[in-house]
Image (cartoon, rainbow, N blue to C red; front, side, top):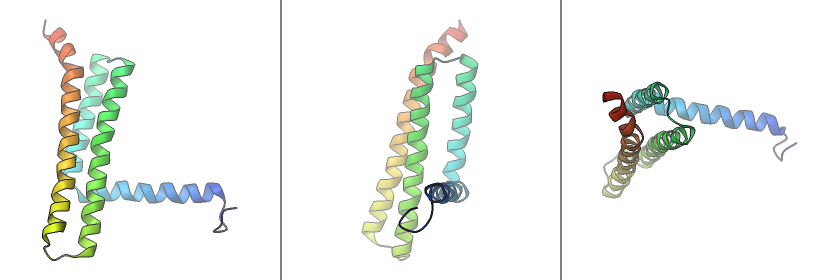
Length: 127
């Protein structure tokens, strides 16, 4: 038993439930999550269609995970900042802008990864 009197597996189940609720909150509250989802589907379809290698899948999945994680961290920071103060504050605004910039950097990185992985396949397809 853990210090809180619950078993290990019960505690893990609760942790996964909390994490799942967080993912659902990102999905419901962030319109960009819908764009990330569409991009994820397109990458998976293209990867299957072009039959990318296992290493290319690893790189693509890491790039997609980077974007999704950045979006989740950005959402968490926005929620926390709004809990601190709904009134405009220059430092809170800067923090939100920086977090949004991190999502942009992750998305641009993922786009570059996508071009590097899929470009040779696209060229071969067009020939």
